[in-house]
Image (tube, rainbow, N blue to C red; front, side, top):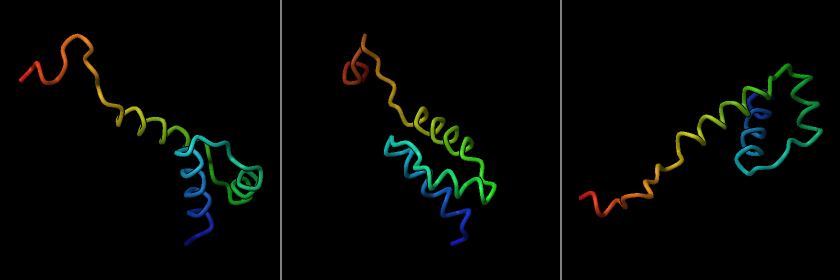
Length: 64
């Protein structure tokens, strides 16, 4: 695995767990010129797409 891929994978893992980036990861990303803000933006968009839509007025079983 390329070092840049490793940094991006670790950043994805931190975001999915809801943790902050460790300073060592931030330093490594800067050294490798990896933009971690794009990882955060990508994860936020993915999380919004996976949230189920809940209709509180009419439960799913009433629509059938």
